Amino acid sequence: MIENTSGPPAAVPAAPRATLILMASVAALGGLLFGYDTSVISGAMLFLRTDFHLTDVQLEFAVGVALAGALVGAAVAGYCADRWGRRVALLATAVGFGVFAVLSGLATGLVTFSVARFFVGICIGMASLVTPLFLAEMSPANIRGALVSLNQLAITVGIAVAYFVDYELAASQNWRWMFMTAVFPALILIAGMIFLPESPRWLARAGYRERALQGFRRLGRGAEAVEELEDVERVLSEEQEGFGILLRPGFRMALLVGIGLAIFQQITGVNTIIYYSPEILRMAGYPSAQAAIIAAGIIGVVNVLITIVSIVLVDRLGRRFLLLVGTAGMTVALALVGLAFQRHMNGRSVFYAVIAYIVFFGIGLGPVVWLLIAEIYPTKIRGKAMSLATLTVWGANWIVASTFLSLIHGVGFTGTFWIYAMICLLAFLFCLAFVPETKNKSLEDIERRWRQLGGDR
Ligand code: BGC
View 1 (cartoon, helix red, strand yellow):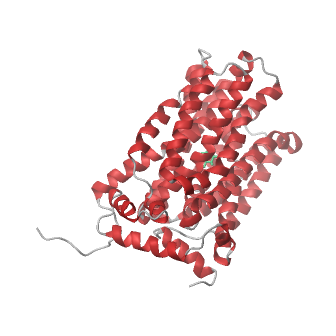
View 2 (tube, helix red, strand yellow; view 1 turned 90 degrees about the horizontal axis):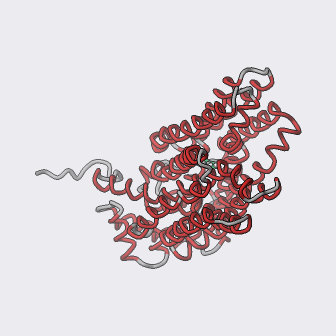
View 3 (cartoon, protein in one colour; view 1 turned 120 degrees about the vertical axis):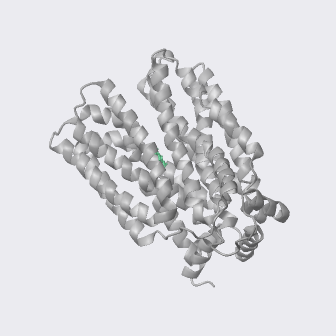
């Protein structure tokens, strides 16, 4: 048999690639739990109110407490991931998800429920950072976009599954199992993380050279394992420790891009659609609450399907292209939602415009923001730098969630969606001006590029 030694070196052979996809899918369960646990509460609200005799303010607290936890989780996740390793951080998160899912379901009143949900929130914040980080560091450059975006696919599946679980359990008013169902994916994630190898990049950074090499091999790098490790080590040896690195000229731009993307992913209004679409459609004239709820389910499924399209395209067309198409499309779609309200068109027009909006979000800002913030920071402080960006995502999410209803009261549906449309336009301009293309580049090449930009060699 003649061995073919020529041809492009970067592509991963088919068998390791299948193993790699399997490993990445297991780790992506972190995203599924993030999606599930953020949205499961919407179906349980009604029953919590009656079972625990909650006032409006108490109910608002019970719903919002997970978001507060997510802020804390995002703030500490980077430190934990840099200190303990990505694998251990994700394993600890999975254990937390399992334990506090059960405790939320067993809660006996507002206090026990809120404490359990606060800890679930911490896990959500941790998972939102560690999952894409782990995926980015294990992936070969040529399919990194797709593998990291499995995280977003899992988030959207989690949101859709929560929706259907809520719908199914609503008839029996079984809100406890709405929360406890999360224990199953948590158990799979725990089992998976026990067997998955640690990120070779983290191992190299921590000085475990042999294990890092083995790690690259287990992740399907054959002959290139040594080369890849040497490149990681070379870049690590040039890196300065600590946050100071992010204030150097080139990396300052990375900081700006990560934080800007985090803000725009949220303030372009996606979660007003994800969490309030039944209410929005009812206001747009949907004939019944049930029809509006089913339409919201369709939006969830479209979100999943379009993420698959983005996964197929992201390593071919690149991150920038998807972001630009996505934000441009979202701008137009939101302008149409506003217009449909202004002209008192029927609910269907609003529904179609909302579907278009989700399609463009799911192509660009949804998956690509998590991907880019996992790619653009230097290995030595990737975790902590991601904490800043992730904290920004959750902070912006909180601002949108707490202002949406007041905006509607203040400027009406038309005004609100037109404001979001203008923000989408700004997001488009921001991406056009600042976001670099990272397609097909190793994480080390991306880092070198920032340095060159800042005038370092
Ligand atoms: C965002 C979430 C959002 C979800 C919707 C994620 O990328 O971070 O806030 O709910 O996408 O698919």
